[in-house]
Length: 527
Image (cartoon, rainbow, N blue to C red; front, side):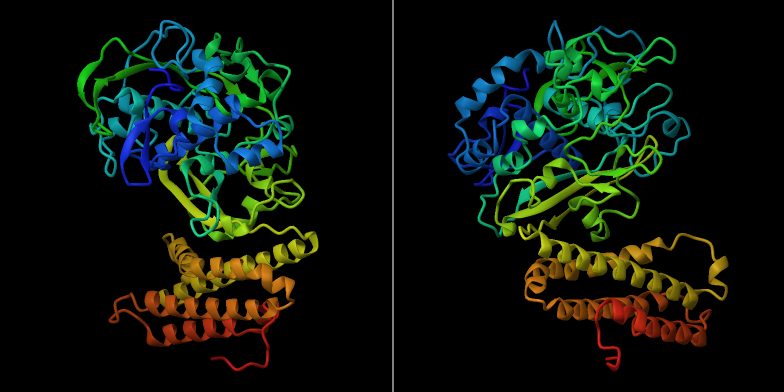
C-alpha cells in the first residue's frame, strides 16, 4: 500500500457516509469530505498532522496569494495526485525498499505484539505486575494496514520515553498540538480541506522554520530513506536543526521499528473492524534518531527555557486543556511562542480572514514518562484583531479574565477544604479537582466574554464586560461551594466551620482587591 495514492484515510462525507479515500481525493466536490473518521481520537489528531505534513511537503503554496486562492477554490484531485507523485518512494508502507516510518535496515530481535504500537496499551512492567486495571491487555491482536500506518505515525509523532535509548519524538513525549480550524458558524466552509489548508505554510514561512533548507535530498526530509542516524552513547550522533531539512519536523522518526509483513492473517481489524490481511507483530531496537537542539515545530506552542533561552514544546498536563492557557497558545511574549500556524493569523503576519470563521483546536496526550494518563482535546475561539493598539488592550483584558479566574479558583479550593477539615493544611489527598471544576463551569462564560471583548475594547466599554465576569466568577464559586461543602456526612460535619468558610469565601469574592482588578464599583452592595 502506498499512503499517497491508495485509499486508506477514514473520512466522513457531508451526507454522513463514511469510507476510506486516498489523500488526493480530499477535494472531491461530489458529497464533500467534511471530517476524519478514525476509530480513535488520537488517530484523528495524528491523521490531521500526517495530511498537513503531506500537503506542506508536496503542495506548499508559493506565496500568500497562492495560499488564499487554494483556500477559496481547492485544487482538483488530479492536481493533488500529480503533486504527490515525486514522493511516492517515501510512502510505501510495505515494500522491498524503504518503508514509511520504518528503519532502513532489517532489525533483529524479539517480536513485539502489534498492540504495543498504541501509546495507551499496557506494556512491560504494567503487564508483569498485573496492574492493567483500566486499559486491559489482549484487546488488540491484529491490525489492518491502514490502522497499522496510523498507529505507526501516532507513535512516532507522540513518542514518549520508552526505556534506555528509546527516543522521544522531536517535540518530546506527548506534545500539545494547536491547529486553526473553521468556525461552523462562520463563512468559511467547514470541510476537511479547509481544516488542513488553514495550517499549511507558504514557501516564505517555511524558510523561517528551524532546520537546514540546504539539506534538500528526500532523505533529509524522510529519515527512513537512508540508514538511520543512530544515537548510541559513544558511537551515535544527535540530530540538530543543522542536520535535517525543516520539513523533517513533520516526519520525525525517533523509534527504530520494522513491521513484520511476512506473518499476515486474514480477518477483521481489531480496531476498525475492516476485513483485511492483518499484521500481528513488529521488531524494534533502541537508539533511533535523537532530536536535540532548538527545534520549533510549526504545529505546537513553545515556551522559552529560562536557562538556555531555547524554545521548548508545550505538553498537556493533568489539569486538562482549560482557557487559563489560551493566551499561551495564541499570543507571543518573552516567555511563550504560539505555534507558527497560529501566529500567522496575527495582524503583523499577513493572513487576513474574518475572525468569526476561525477556532483553535488543541489536542495531545498527557504523559507520565511512558504512561499515558489521558488524551485531551478542546476547541476555543480564535480572535483576530488588525488594530495593534486595540489588540494590546484586548490581550491585557484577557489576561485579567484569566488571572482573576485563577485567583477565585484558589479561593474556592481553600474555602471548601476549610469547610471539610479541622486542620486543612494537614489534610491529605489531591483536591485539584476543585479548581478544575471551577474552570469547567466558567468555560462558557469565558468564551462568551472573549467573543464580546474585541468590540467592548474598541468601544471603551470593557468595564461592563469585566463587571459581568465578576458576577460569573462569584456565582460559580458560591454554587460550587454549596455543592461540595455539603458533600460530607452531616453527622461528622461542623456547621460552624462550614458557615465560617462560606463567610470567608463571600468576603474574598466581594473584596476590594478582586473588584478593583475587574473595575467593579467597590461601594456596590453584594447581591
